[in-house]
Length: 426
Image (cartoon, rainbow, N blue to C red; front, side, top):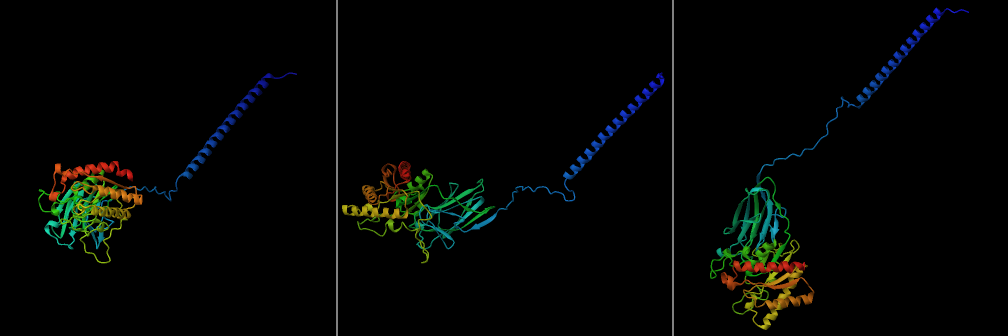
């Protein structure tokens, strides 16, 4: 059989061309599918992203951030009564009838403020004869530096303190420099020019209470002669061994001190006992020389203020009476009873019994009284030491009292003793 090769070749060529067309169509279809897939993916992605966008019809509010702002408060004159919310009482004080009263040496008030100036208005109690030589003396400190010191010659006086140079807080402290026997002072008001309120300062870390006589009160310390007449104008608690000891220890101090007072008897120049002027009769009092109504007590409660240590310096005036064995035995009993009284009022507080050399003849009987008291009570927090003022070498002031140099020496002795011995009793 014969085949026509020409027709076969033509057919094969035609079949090849058809296959190419099929392949081309398949490629076109595949490309279209890919494009469609890309389009679908793109639409899905755009739709998803749009769903994630916030609803512009209800726009999201931005988070509120609190930015601290400094509110400017204009300075103004501010007036205060010396309440416990405004001042910290220094030592023993009595707040009565809107007045902060104080009479003991070293007592007063303290507050802090940020101000251009401060005014302290003071009044003097009129319950005693206000004679020129017995008027009270006060001092004002700003951040520990003496800013004002004066005799209150008027029934009411205002002390103005410039605080404009103080950067930041100023601590203003007012204390009485003269003893309780002759006067009582009242703080009636405080005025400041400031943008913020006056506030009381915190309690001191250490507080010393001194119990004594004219030596502790600073009798005649500022006198120019040892032969002058006594005056509160020359009495200055700041110069005493008591105040200087407190300063050396970084402590606040005040004194229950009365000139001429003793343990058994006050000073006597005729050998007759004077039992009415003894410290045991005054120790429990907040102040003196202030007439109060019957419903107001001047008794000190011993609850609002707790001393770190108590120093008793008594016996100098008793020596003028206790020059026989019988009287010295009575002195020992009276001193022992005083220790009982002080301990009952101040449980757990170390008591240091001292005596200086203005007349220290009764010091052996003080140590005897302390030993007997400890034997009876088992109280380990009582100790004794003798103070040397070296008055023969350093000199004296009015009526033979120790001068500033003598007090400074005694303060060194007592400070060393308190650091080495008394503080270990706590």
